[in-house]
Amino acid sequence: MIMAWRLGLTHPFAVLLVLLGALLAAAFAILPTLDPWSGQAPWILSTGLAGYIAGVLVVARWPPSSPEARRIRATRRQVARRLMEQSRVPSGETRTELRRLTRAALARIDEEIVPPFLGLVGHNIDLKNQLATYGASLPAPDAASLQRLRDIYAHRRAATDHCVQQAVDAETRLAALLQEPDERVLATQLEVWTDGLQDLTIELARALILPPLPASAGSADGLDALNTEGEEAPTPVGEEPQLPPELDADFVELVDQAMKHLNKPAHLAKSGLAARLPRSIRAIRRQWSPAQAGEATSLEWAQALRQLLVDASERLKPAESDSSTRALQYHILHKKYVLEQEVKHIVIRHDISESTFFRERVLAVRAVADDLWQQERRLAARPTRDPVAIDYLG
Image 1 (spheres, one colour):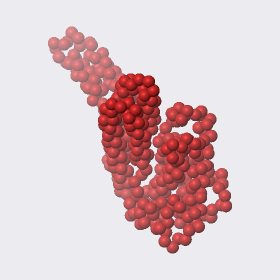
Image 2 (cartoon, helix red, strand yellow):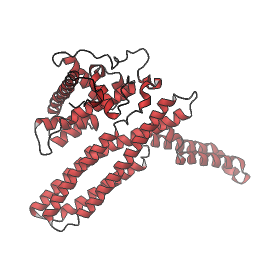
Image 3 (cartoon, helix red, strand yellow):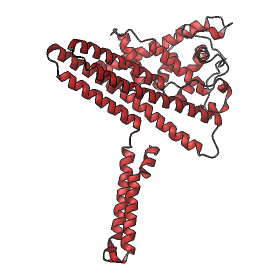
């Protein structure tokens, strides 16, 4: 919000209005030839200021979109135009099928691709502004933390460019396949193309996963700043608690809260769930790099915990043709927490009521909690003579 106001205050059009108003007011007040209208100078200056304020408010309320956002929207419009034009041509059953495929393709784009992509672009803009602020601040921030922010920005910047390229490639493939004269073959190819959009959805989900920390960062003091002063930090991973004999309600509640804050590293860093999964945390860090076997920082903790939750959710994923309750539970978790879609979009996409959504969400969270708990039990039962060889997936 602060950045939106800053863009408004420095927008060229708004600044131009106030400068023109000031120059005209000065000219009316100073130049002898304009002396008959000198009494209008205050009104002209006021008009310029009013135009400037209006420009600032408009830009702050509706800030200009980024080039990436404009490109993805343009691609969506092109895809919609091509599909709608094609669906009008055939007749009979083929026309009905093409219209169904068109609706399915646009629904996937509007619900699973555009919202998370715009969210990713927004994250990039915020992070870029933060880096600019920290770079000019005195005293200078901790070097390790600043470099970590730069690495995250570079990772998400590259992911954004890759997703834009994938969207453009998908549009090009669509233009090519729509040249198919056989209507039945076209319907089959269009269905395959729509299913292929899932690859872009997966890439967007991966873009939100933070890149692994460098092995030397295991003891960086600056990264522990995620733990706010005065709050109790999680138990160190090395202190492995005894597992209860059965899955308990507190553990499920910790998983529930962690899922609700899946894309908020500061919250995950303070979550008590990581202290309940020390072996899983250590194992996944070793998968990133065997050198990351030491004590984890708070940021590493949050990163590993998020990866554990996403992986456990992905293990709920059924076969493509599966329309069971388990499939619905997977889609609810993936779309609500990984892609951060709104509930109203999810219930419409899957043709379910909100009560069904919330009931299945509770069951899905419990399934993830059970998966994580069973995984931790398997790791606890294994010998640790060769810890690098432990596969946290069991």
